[in-house]
Image 1 (cartoon, rainbow, N blue to C red):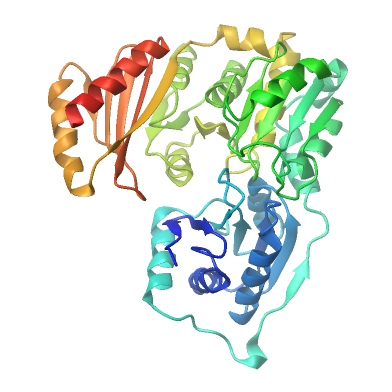
Image 2: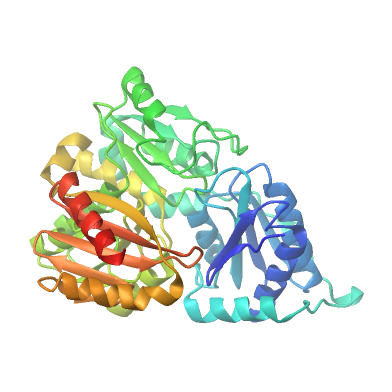
Amino acid sequence: MNEPIISVSGLRGIVGDSLTPEVATRYVAAFAESLPDGPVVMTRDGRHTGPMVAAAVQSALMAAGRTCLDAGVAATPTTGILVRHLSAVGGIQISASHNPPEYNGLKLFDRTGRVIPAGPGQHVLDRYREGPPSWKSFDQLGASHAIDDTVTAHLAMVAATCDVDRIRDRRFKVLLDSNNGSGSVLGVPLLQELGCEITLLGGEPNGLFGHTPEPTADNLAGVLELVRESGAEIGFCQDPDADRLAVIDEHANYIGEEYTVSLCMDHVLRHSPGPVVTNCSTSRMTQDLAEKYSVPFFRSKVGEANVVDLMHQENAILGGEGNGGIIDPRVGFVRDSFVGMALILDAMAARDMSVGALVDELPRYAIHKAKVQLGADQVPSALDALEQHFDQAAADRLDGLRLDWPDRWLLIRASNTEPIVRVIAEAPSIDEAKQLCDAAEAVIN
């Protein structure tokens, strides 16, 4: 059996191989030991393996003496809302995010409703690796209770971020592609609340994905024509656990995930200036917007937990990652596709502009990504060589090596799970971005 992919905020693996009931119960037991007394919320993203993994999680929580609040199929950001709304001490979302159907996983939340930060996450991981769990005796077992309403609290908080009446007046035609994940559970009620005419794809949360789960341009090629055929003014495409959002414009052009955070940020900063945070692999558009609106801009390490840590530290009003994950503290410190939908529709209604026109106003860059085979022991010398080679750039070792020029940047980071380094470049054109990646690869090799 292979090892699951484990980070400080959770794990994921192939069901029946690296993710088994034994792995799930051991990991959940380690998490339960780290929590104060109280109930734990459990949700899942709709994958067909979810009920099996949920049974293992529920069993482990009860065997650890915990009350399991079973909220069934729900989006990852909804998990964070439910933890707070139900006064739970933690939460577990059963999801493998954008991974293929054979994968599933566990994402951990603390009592504040955010993905657990690195310190507590490392403690859980250490306990998981130490040895067998500590189970309670027969007279100390926990219970399980089903949560019937998983939508109301989250919907109300998202609606409060926008002018609902203004959006309703426009009666937008929207295509929502939930791809048979958990996004439709809240996505449909939210768009109905906003008065939208909805064309729904993949509305049944059964994990039978209509296309490869990650909402990238290639994977959404078949959705583009459906946006055109439906006459939709905008297409919203979610990943299976609905914490990421990609956008398609009124002409059936894929706008993409990098623009989600920037569209939201431009709209919010127009009316409510304040500090913003994105990670070091997110488009420079966000930095340009912060400069445009004269607000503080901060850059974190890659990873949602790192973005949230810095948002707390700097009292940021918005944060996010370039994979389509907007984080709005008014709703919660979790990437949230529903916040993205509400803010983008509000921007369209407020300025009486199409989403394509809003995108045309944003700074324009292109991102290219590559990877290079490299052992972990070779990474430090490779980064030193790159910094010396690109000596005209501003170098930052916050997370790997980031090199910045006035209109472009290059990021080189070691993978946590493979003997490779990931190389990401952004420049005014895709050719220039690719040239940066090629030059970096030449130095490494």
